[in-house]
Image (cartoon, rainbow, N blue to C red; front, side):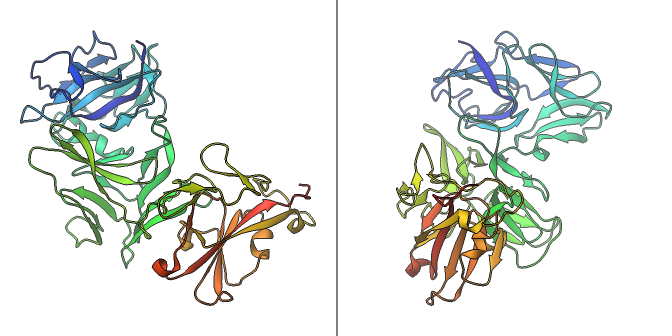
Length: 439
């Protein structure tokens, strides 16, 4: 069976490497080889990396370095190649870091710790497709630590480069999400390229966004003060935001503690959830905690839960706003008469070319502070006159004549609103092309 290395240069939590659990270890010896000196090359072939695991779906983990679990069973940290069959759409849920994430290589590719001290990933034809950038920096070797961190060391065992500083979509215990960095979800279960959803630490908050123009925020944990350079660290039992080492915590999310003899990691997934996974003997990896707590907490407050223009109800059922103005080709909905996707130059009669479809009792996930614009009046003109506006949320209390309009540049998942729970009323106004209009 032909394979492609959809995740390459991986540090993986290979939970069934020596413990069965649906995988077949092709060498049963209890190896432990966590380090290598330069120059070393590992080929992505069965012969080049004979210590490998074949899973039920046909995917293969080929191991170049292995930090064996001290207990001799359960998950071990490994560096190598994770290969999936070309027909497989499964996600390698145990992979926690990867190089060249968006462009997988194939059979015969190689990872090389060069004589000049760089870690390089090469395709089967020998061309370099990724490198750590450590050439000439006195690298003497590479090791994978007991915490899962892949580290390039110099002759004094000082760290020159480490995978903990190069985030993908997952965090391990002891790893930090630094200021200015992003934890970025995959595009989908099958598509391992960077998606639109990301988590970041800002000067005043830990925030999760979907990338739009401007980015739309669906999670916000404020600090109550500004702390330039703040960062979040995943420790045993918490995700803690600090301004600097040793300083009091700015914010803390309490997590389940890591059980004795087991391992945890957290992953920002393509649906926007930041899930905590734990290895459990006999059953393998299982989600044990949803880290981001949204309000209202019914599953509908995530940007893509029902796709574009989809309306999510309390039981996370999805529907289109109405059959007269929207259709559902697959996931999400599409206006039957969508407005133009770009502004261009203004033209006379633009307002007459569009109209608004009103959805009472419907809200939107985007934080008001990250809306396209906030308008302190109630009028249709605010969105109709703004060519960048795709929808407007009218947000109000008991008086329908007293509220705010929040304009949105893109319409993702909508949600029904229960005023008795959220203590506000909301109507969404969706811009569509007037049926008689000509753009």
